Image 1 (cartoon, rainbow, N blue to C red):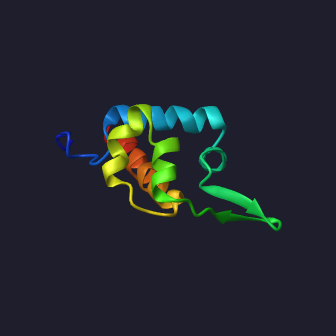
Image 2: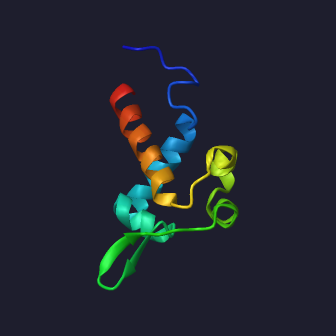
Length: 96
C-alpha cells in the first residue's frame, strides 16, 4: 500500500474529500450536486456546463472547508474544478 501524505490528494485534503463525498450522497448523485452548485444548468432541453465569474463563484461556493482551495480555483467553468475533486475522491476511495 502506498504511503498517504498531505501531498497524495493535493490540493485537496482528506477532510475536504470526505465532506464532498457527503454532499454528493445528500444531493443524490454528483450531477445533482453540480446543479445545486450552479456548475451545470438546464437550457433548451439539455444540460450544459455553466460559465461563472471566477471571483463570484469563489465567494459563493468556496467557503467553509473549501475556502483554502480558492487559490487553486481559476476557471470560469466550475464543473471542471469539481470534476477534478471527484477524480481525487475516487483515488482516495481506492487507497483508503
